Length: 218
Image (cartoon, rainbow, N blue to C red; front, side):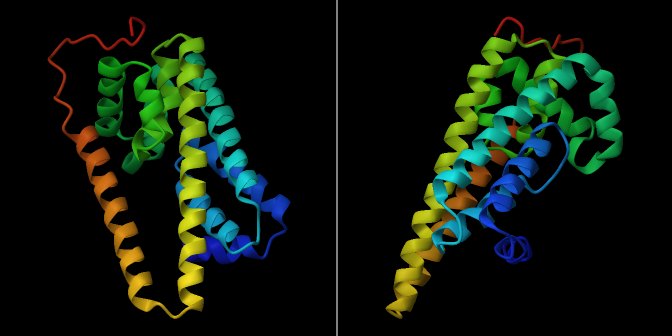
């Protein structure tokens, strides 16, 4: 993440916004890219006054919504054959096991999988193409997609922005104990949220043989 942040800081603000939107957009189409790392790095740059937080959040939300919609169109046109090709190309991220878990989440939770998928690495990549391949109604997909993209982008950006500003203030005051507690709290909360999200995905029961996977009725 530090490498990404050092790279971004050398760029003009407009280029940073475009990179945030572009990386997150391409990731949302189904290509594994460090979208979350890019957003975190840009948010910390905003805390340092290099870029504006509202523009970072807006660029991230735009990339998420447009990218997911493009992924939906690609998935609807390419179907499961496209997902299979992506799995062969990126087996560690989009292999058969990951696809099966994501597909089961769609079957059980419908468009809610699109909303909450924005906060889970696996579903963040697969949500658009998988929703298209499963023929989820686009209007319902768009509502969940837009809501999830906006909440994820603005919540992540402003949380990190304010944490960064507080940390900078503490550093100036040499309040190392407070800074250490803040770092531990941030790491602990991030670990807990990731563990809950990982458990939610990995503890989904395996589908019964012959179980039809369809999200149309959701």
